[in-house]
Amino acid sequence: MIDKKWIGQELPPSVLPIERTRLRFFAKAIGETDPVYTDEPAARKAGYPDLPAPPTFLFAAELDSGTIDAMLVQLEVPLEKLLHGEQSFTYHAPACVGDTITVRSRIEDIYDKKNGALEFAVKTSRATNQRDELVAELRTVLVCRH
Amino acid sequence: MTKPSYDSVQVGDQLPTLELPAVNRTTVALFGGASGDHNPIHIDIDFARRAGMPDVFAQGMLGMAWLGRLLTRWIPQAHLRRFDVRFQGITHLGNQITCSGRVVEKLEVNGENCVRIELQNTNQFGQTKIAGEALVAL
Image (tube, rainbow over all chains, first blue to last red; front, side, top):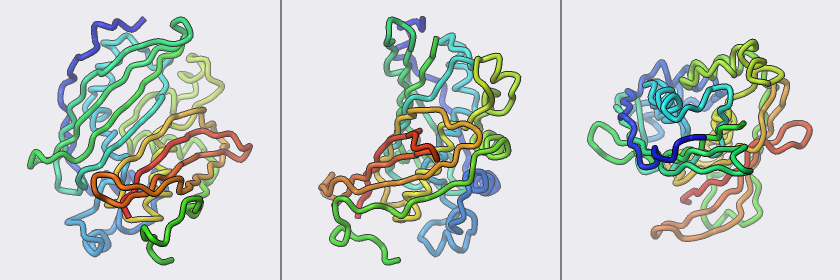
């Protein structure tokens, strides 16, 4: 069982610099063909200072930093049993190439269903930029299947 | 296509669907690298089998990213206010996903005219893999 003592636990911040080559790689991986996401002049024409991060990109911050891996070790959830249950984003400002995004998360809840056959961990996050402006809020529900 | 406006959009309107090619090992490996999700269950068949899965499978966030494409083909990303999904089933190799969206409500949120879109990822057998919704300011 995931120990409920972790409810309220704050995770170490993750810093994600938004980089052009990474965004182009991400666009390729999701089959994105809109030039706004790969071509700087097209992005500028659309009103962005540089390429914008697509809607789900900021999820990378805590994967890159290793924060998710460390949290799973702490919660004693092995990768073999891990599923992604839900994901939410609330958007406040764009994140573009040149921005540095910091994601700060907290474990909001831990609960189980089906007499412990499924365990859930809820994590909420705030993503801010280098000017300390709120860029997005994220909510993740992770599932451990037994 | 003319850009959707609050007045032109009606409840029940469908977003133009997005059809993806069948998921293969390259799709999943590339997304693993690009998204930072290095969980071997998506890229290493030996690990996947030890975990009790028949094979590697697609990351949930890949399916969500495709729904993001559905949305940003319809309206510029700056109009997107919220984007929520529930992962309902595993997207296996060979699955051909269709992303669809439907306007289900016109409403005012924080003084902005918005529409609520119901979202779905479905494979070629009609199985829903992801269900969700988005709030878009128009």
